[in-house]
Image 1: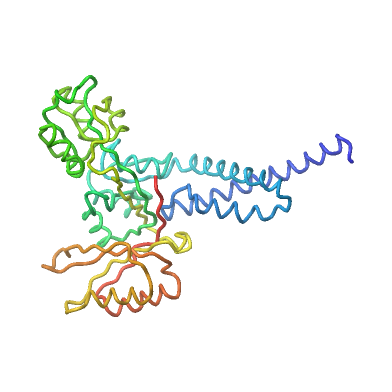
Image 2 (image 1 turned 30 degrees about the horizontal axis):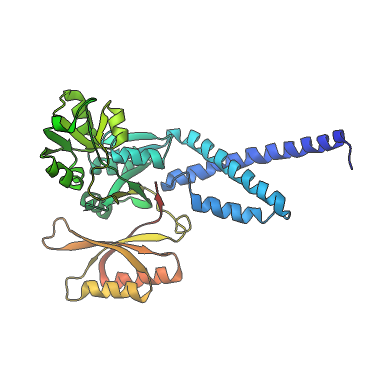
Length: 362
């Protein structure tokens, strides 16, 4: 057995090697962040972290030491994420709405520490990413209660951005108002049309007049500025706190399963490898002939891709002509995926690969 001083000297030498390796790894994290920012990907990817831990833990032969090494790896990756978030303070994220709106909450959860730039409408947020004013744009594409957000889908069809991530945000709508307000005081409630729709049963039950507003955050701000207890808003608890309001009645949306899917749009197309071969989006038009859409669906079925979503949207400038938005599960970069695209191009007037993505729940 070595004496204590010799052992300490060896530990010091190993610590120096670890310090050099640590600095090198953190520098590589800078490259990871740059690539993620370019592709509009989140800093935290739990599936990728699990793969790294599983792969690297096999390098430790002693099973007891392996347990500690897993903890060491997790701590190292946590530090790496913190470092990336610190660097990501320069990242600019566009969204539609005002501070406190659900889109703003989604941005904060997805890209913590970034600069969040509000825009008055979906088109200006989308254009901000297209022209480089923002690195990414975060916008809603579908709500589990109210359905698709047609305006965002239309922008994706006509624009040049790619969807590199989808994430699901659970939406809880609350009746919020001035502090000390009782439900009996309220005569009018203001909010976004979708929020009013989601809470229609509650509004009707209490005989309150519903008035549409641009978004939930602006509605809450309006209530705070009026100082009138007869006016309330429907918004999140975070929004209420932001504008100095209080929750009068929580969770008033009719469906407990109220979730909004947000898409992260970027100027750079994600690689299928980055998306883990999970999902991809196709937008297409079909020939104006009998059975044209059936031919497209048959091609998808023959190649054994599960289509999780299909929506039609009217084509602007062409009366009674529609285009289609389809989400499919699988790897579009595989041999089957490439053959799918080739065969679809023969039966579609127009075919566009909008992006490949993973789905995260927040």
